[in-house]
Image 1 (tube, rainbow, N blue to C red):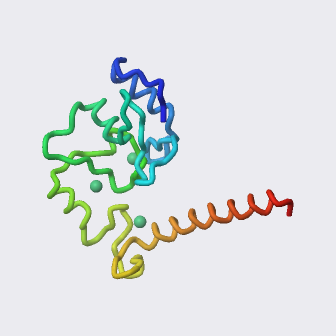
Image 2 (image 1 turned 135 degrees about the vertical axis):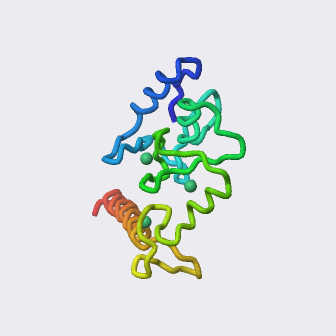
Image 3 (image 1 turned 90 degrees about the vertical axis):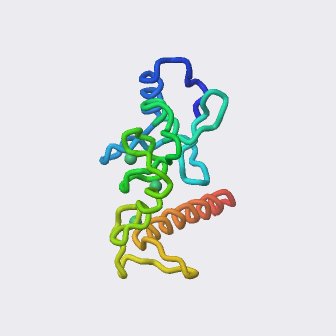
Length: 153
Ligand SMILES: [Zn+2]
Ligand SMILES: [Zn+2]
Ligand SMILES: [Zn+2]
């Protein structure tokens, strides 16, 4: 969280200050470097409130989200991408359609039988599921190593 963001400053200055706190990846995503929220989205402390990162940057750039619309990320964006140009406002109906493409998962990977992971009757993208498990295993391994180090082995 950044507490120094002046919400009364011109919006382009605010956006720039936010961008400086991000890592920019090869897709042009602004990856928020703050502590990740359990939801996976970036959270930014702004005008005494905790705001969802991509909603805040969208509003700074374009003004309020049109009534009855929700922001949808580009398929190649991770959830904590807050580049305001990587989200589009969609109605709830359009948004659900965007997430039920018969050929692609929302992440952009193909929805094929070989790339489908099934767990407890639910299906998801196998490639992303594997990447998620790898990250999780790495965290577990690091914690285990740190434990053994702390007991002097
Ligand atoms: Zn992005
Ligand atoms: Zn979406
Ligand atoms: Zn995927």
